[in-house]
Length: 196
Image (cartoon, rainbow, N blue to C red; front, side):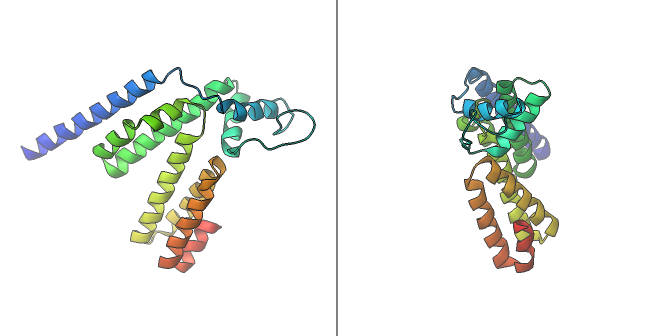
């Protein structure tokens, strides 16, 4: 029947997507970007009780992703080696993105995400790329849903995710402002919940 064929086709796309994802992760398994060690240095010093510092003496902020530094330090604080912690965070974020995209957009979107070399490689690279992409994707989807369905709770949650994306990468705050402007134009009272 038509429904049976459609199910088989969807399943085939999911299998191909998961195979592409697994193959990409396997191929990139030894990749770790040297810039990730900057964040890990701050995480290491924080865990040692020296605060968010690079060295003793003058305090200089040399990281652009405070949330990633803190999350890595959090995992490091429970015994996970810092390099492993940053890779684990990237893989968790990639897994969350894959699950979210599949749930809201279906198998073809899953295939696009799973086969995207940048996302797959950078999820293992120790940097915040996958986490930023996850937060920004869900926040943007929530803003669109708020505009369509007028759900005030989703605007507040979108604001939290835009804030998280801004703490992962500075341009996340710009995305939050743009999301707020879109909501403001459609629903001025609800837009405040993204900003607060």
